Image 1 (cartoon, helix red, strand yellow):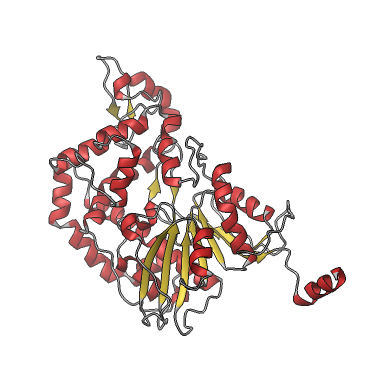
Image 2 (cartoon, helix red, strand yellow):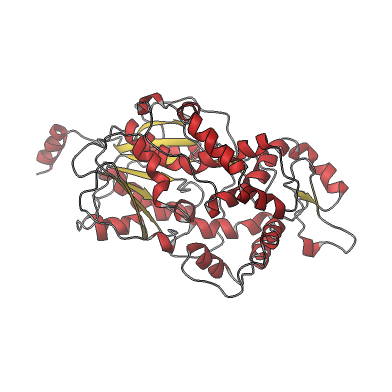
Length: 460
């Protein structure tokens, strides 16, 4: 069990916080609670919160995907079961049904089923991303939509191009880095070191049969090659953002990845996003950040870990130079007591949480509290990422209130460059995965050994 939690609260950030340059704030809608579950699921909460902005949207999505319930939808996503009736007769039908899930009026929120026979939802011709039930709604919405129209045009292309990643037609460039990791300070230097290999990879994908098949079935004109190349680069940063952010944490927090037996990273609160369709080689780039490392073990832990990703782990030494991925479904503080404290799973050198969302609702905060206190009290180096400056400020305040010793925070140099649209509120400013990070280690109220001994002696 973790040491007894301290109850003191600090309302001001500790003086040791190292502020870093951040970009202007974006806005993210907090996830409202609509479910009563013993262990709040970010995936489920996010799905059902769609109805708060667009009543009936969750049911429309299930209908278009030939699903009867969210449970069926989740089973298919997890790979834990096949659902009778799921699937499409052809690619054209699949892309059409997927696009249908975005069909609602961005201004009045009307679904197709709520329109009169004389009305039809029509796309914005500029971004091909949002729909309107008529010219009046489109004109009324333009002052807001114009702020994000160009960015949403990228979103519309990216969500189609992701099919190439899902099918394996777009294989990420990989291989040892020709320079020291310290030189790679962000995407600009990463693209420079991968320049020749990346150009060959992108050219091959652009000219592939899979690319031709994709745009022959999506029901819209194929964009220019430079637009498609830009989308592939954004998707690449989205796929590599997580492993490179792990590397950022290992470097910044001074973790020794050259120790005998290898190093271990626990990804806590891992969800469908981190584990569905993740392949063993997807984290190889993490290994290339640390040439000569003696093995890196990455264990994903969370209640939304995909069923196909829950592979067994061991405490045996890792093969030098390898990156091992595995998963465990459950809450982290339970995993700690059952697996880590008993010696079945290796003690972590670093813990990372991608978008934990504990700022968004009381139930999520309640579920995260035991884990946050455990990480603080055991003084485990921890890195958290968030989507926006607003989330950064809210999460920092919570961590300060919990007496955590925040060592650094700021803009993530390996944030995804792929814009993420708020599904049920399409004209909200898009956000970017892992846009900001927070690092903490132990408590801001730690006593040194001498102080602790004096305190204990005084109580005897």
